[in-house]
Image (cartoon, rainbow, N blue to C red):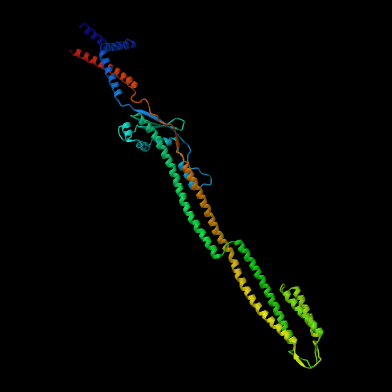
Length: 475
């Protein structure tokens, strides 16, 4: 009873307000002493509750399934893409950027995507999925991705209930990311290669069609070497023109000779008196011979010169002089009066017939030469247009050929680029099997539940003491 009264007195003193005139330090000392008295009286409640809470926490820590964590490190490359040069076609230059890896932050987002992580999770065996997570479904907390500050290093952290599964999942996420990036880059290259192949097929067909058109045009027009053919046509035209001029000169000379023979023949008699023993005047025969020589010389000159040339005019002057002299000289001397055929008349007749035949053949030759010359001129005039058309066709064939060769080179470059393509990063540290779990941390559990137990014990001691004091007051 005495003890009970002492405790009651102490409790009343503890709960009795201090006088206003006392200092703050005395009030704090009284409160502290009162609580210490409560803790002293209810120490078994305090210790019991603390022990129960700590024991419950340790049971929870030791019975909770351990969680393991493993980290893989990858280095993200800043530039990776299709190689190209300044002479690339615009489509290749535009598609070059498609295979270039984005920023490291972008790659972190790609690695953090659930699609990629679930794809990597699907590569695990069902046994590993069940052992690591208890179900064939990836939890949201299983994989985390973070970038090391001020570096291009990305850490892939995987958590699982089995240490081997955590390491395998981290490495699988990294390999799946590399495979996807390589597949995406190669897919872009294949799209470009497909476009190049289609363009090559189109250009090849156009090249074959243009080559056939050029071959048909050469066959139809006979144009093989335009420069040589134009030069040959010009030479032929010049030769035909010369032949025509020569033929005209010969025909003109023949006409003049024929007219001269007609004039001479008109002056000659078909028969002469032979009974008077008329003999040819030697001077007359000499003049006649010189006339024949001059006529022959004139005909020869007409082969080279025109009738208006100085040489022909000089010969004509000499012929006129000889004819004038011939008219002044007696042809013969009468020796008898017997009639006979005039041989000069016969010779002139035969010569006239010959000149007339030459005149007819000359006209025929001139007509033929003029017709051929006109035909050759028409052909020569069409040669430049044919040459231009042939040059256009040949240029088109050459352009298509060069375009095809350029596309073939690009296709070869794309094939080499696809074979040499690399993913957007590389693994610098594989995830290893962890030896210790990261959760639960038993030391943290012990400290946390110890603090919680002390708080709960203090609270329980105070509540029990107040409850006991209330019951006594009611009594």
